[in-house]
Length: 156
Length: 156
DNA sequence: CGCCAGAATTAGCCATGGCTAAGTCTTGAT
DNA sequence: ATCAAGACTTAGCCATGGCTAATTCTGGCG
Image 1 (cartoon, rainbow over the protein chains, first blue to last red):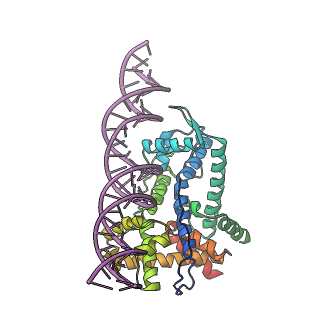
Image 2 (tube, rainbow over the protein chains, first blue to last red):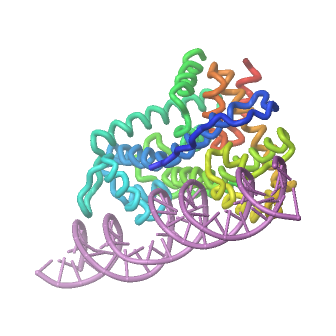
Image 3 (cartoon, protein in one colour):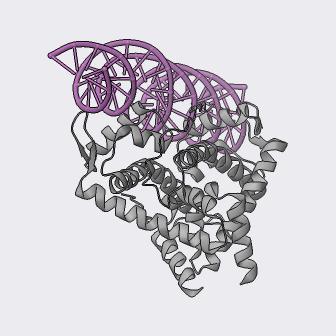
């Protein structure tokens, strides 16, 4: 998917660098953020699908669309991608079911989401803000940071 | 920049909801995340441009490209958008300068970035991880959450 | 049973943000 | 003063993720 090549060759070093990270490090960081964006949708969808199934026994595109705040064709397109990636299984005009891989991913996401929310709540935020910010933040939290969140809550 | 508005109207309540937020709230949350994505690039660019100017006196597209980890034409396209949005000023084949609006945005972003980094560091993360996660997180942190971060650090 | 409302799909548009290839301009070195 | 290297731009491709419009299917109701 992402064809980064970069051919990193150590060039000059203008001497005026003081505290900021190296250029390649920064570039990789931005690259990582862009990569994260690509997987966000998949994660949001499998998480939501799992939630819908547990809540009402099935996950229908129309409900996903309503929950995500998008139109049905958008959902259809994204579901096609999820299917191609082996995260869900479906038959035409039928409900959607996550594969084992999808369920596993959903589980990871849900857990991470809950940790982030719990952490934000522990900082004194109201539930709605915590949920909303968590939706944006959770995809960009590294394992180390997630561990730090857990640690910080444990100590409270 | 971010036009989250909420317009909470109390609709039906299908009775099987227990703890999760209302459907419209969730949809708006996802909408807000999508909106945030659109403004991320602008924020990253003006922030980087400002940094380059302070560091070396000028911001050249080639340096921006290297820092962002993208090719020059990509930078050119994005700069065109920033210009259209009134965040930067430039003449062909010349360095780039932020407008007052661009500088103001850069200042806000830099401050927010630094708070997030400082907060992550205060949780015991190493600098590199903190910087990297901050790049992803900072665009999704509401004012309330930012304030909570500051508060948490102040108390330490 | 037949029919129609609504769910799902398909087709096709637009914007964004990557990229390469190729052309244009600037600038520094000879 | 020239010219070549490299910075910048332009043109045009691709993928993604929104959308509308139009079609197809399903299922429930008269």
